[in-house]
Length: 68
Image (cartoon, rainbow, N blue to C red; front, side, top):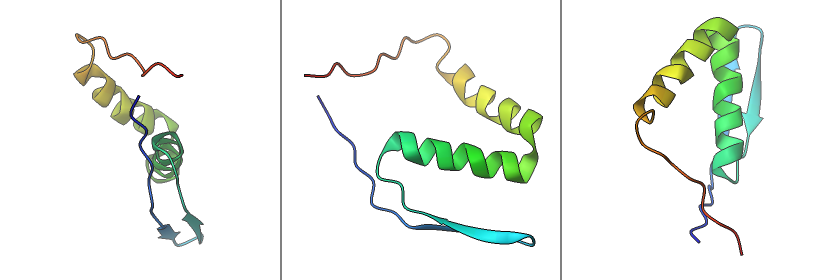
């Protein structure tokens, strides 16, 4: 099983404020990215944007790795 770890510091700023994130896994990074998309684009536009990505994998079956 392959384990991916992430070492990143993300600082996001907008007129109403700012926030910092330190994701440690792909799952955490995805949550941060989606949260920022929703704040920037709104819920419907963020959903449409992510749906475009999932369309890319529509024909292939991508299974998560099995744990030990």
